[in-house]
Image 1 (cartoon, rainbow, N blue to C red):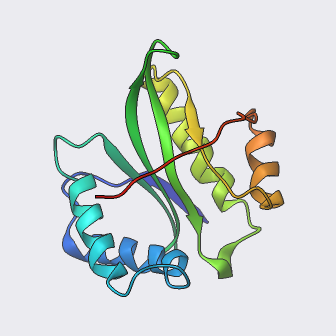
Image 2: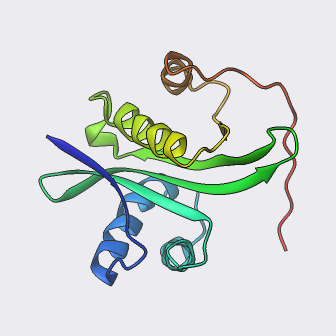
Length: 151
């Protein structure tokens, strides 16, 4: 059975390391050589008391098999708070078992309880399985060109 829950802001270092270990599966092929250190720094920042970031994890038998990492932001267009879903990741050995859907449903329910106006995210244009999941839960395409910069 898979248990999905929000990570408490008081999470201990062992849990933070387990979360970083999971996300390394996503970053190893593309991440920088110091990806683990960056993950730990980001997780620590996300779990600070004043942070607008939140982490939800899916656990099976004390093994973290998936996670959602999100930020709450404000939008003039939406008339209030919305979620930017940075990452929804399931370990490759645990995919196609409904874990991503359970994570996303937990995030949606949590957002509704907080009166958040919506969720936005980004996925690869060729990621058909992920797009099917999002569409099955009422997400729709937003046509735009995303830009970025690093400092």
